[in-house]
Length: 530
Image (cartoon, rainbow, N blue to C red):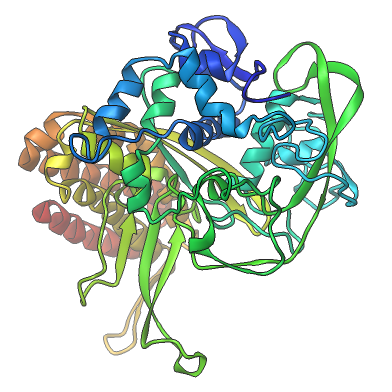
């Protein structure tokens, strides 16, 4: 299956509400239509969008004119509003689709898409390419979920296989056991821009040439910049700035080979009629080292100054760069500042900085209206996926006018939950002061952990509404104060709900009252500070 020619993109018409079909890449870029990706898993939907963005980025990058269109904005807007012609499409894919050297052919005899031939590793169920599902060979406690079976995905079609391969190499933790991970780390967060229809979404996430250059990504041309399955990674140390655009976007850190069934069968993910399917894969690890962090355009990068080790020849302060990831159960909005606001650490007093994903920075500069973010990733523990996290966050037009406002809202929300947890932790542990001969018995239950979950669940709609409401940024002072008051009221309500059952015991009332008084003082400062 050639991704440049075959119908493989799973979509629904009419903005996602219409009939399901498999679209060709040419139809997507060259024909009008309001399609949306349609898969039963949110992570695969985002991976499909990201794969299409990467393909379009390397083959149809908007150039711009250095004199009249230095940032390429006009060229990009033209791509967004008008489909490509057939001639433009054929010209764009030609370098990647030369006869015998088709880069995007999933079944190519010598260089299959994101695979290697003659892999000798053990045969693994294809289900392992779908993160979070139990593996057929796993016997670890908790490996099997209530609603997932080890044979849930025995057959997957070429469309799902291509998306899953790309997702595994780009967004997932490694296969474990010494296998290398993606260029962005173990399980990075992907942040893209949403739009009206799939074609617009793709183009809004394709960066213009000047913006790729600003991220210090090399563009070497197709003759020198070839994907890893065409020009395999060498077992050596590779400097990040030696990796070109094509190679970096389609980096495959493991040697993988799909195993195709001799029989046709319905795809266990997409359903439908019997089609050629894959039942497993083989993979093998190999040793290499990437020195530094390749500035992948699809994730927010955080920067911090760490103390260097002079014994290793390091400076007094060294720069540490890494891509944002989900390390806790906190929702995506708690990292929104890093997702959209650039922060420099050139200032001597600054200890941390951030660089948003390329499409977010580009959307900010285009300022075409509200910003709708597609945010996705996995919360992991080593090579195991604990949770899939995929969301859309909308920011009203005007947030760009003062970039300090959005971080302030995030700070208020995070400070509120921290105060609530701290005071409930006090009520749980009690209070002792030997000098004053004070001893207050604590509740003894970890109610502060429950409080955090309740806070995030009950603030979700309020926070979404606040971020997406135009008045939030046009009437900033009132909106900020109102937001802080609502956060405080919610904290008070959660505190009461969690401590009331324990207030029936007289010996616990002093600790609860002491914690509540402290919470009132803290929340008053929160509201006054807003």
